[in-house]
Length: 74
Image (cartoon, rainbow, N blue to C red):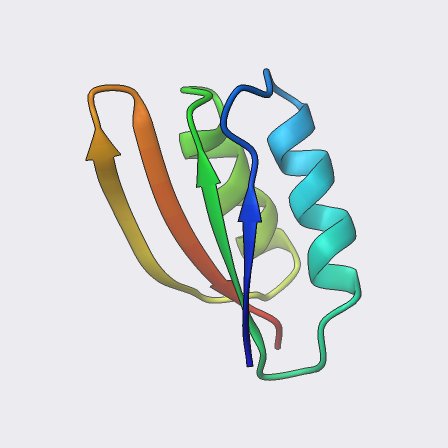
């Protein structure tokens, strides 16, 4: 299953906090697509995913200051 989290407009650390809460509700193997526009989250989200053993399956810039990242719950 894939769930999408929209955090555009939120300043750091809120995209990371929202992502942490959302991924905790997922089942193992499910993916969370996080859309965000906070530059600091480009490092913070992948780092937190790695610390928790969650693989990043997709990471892309979608605009001048917006990104999408997909994290899989392991």
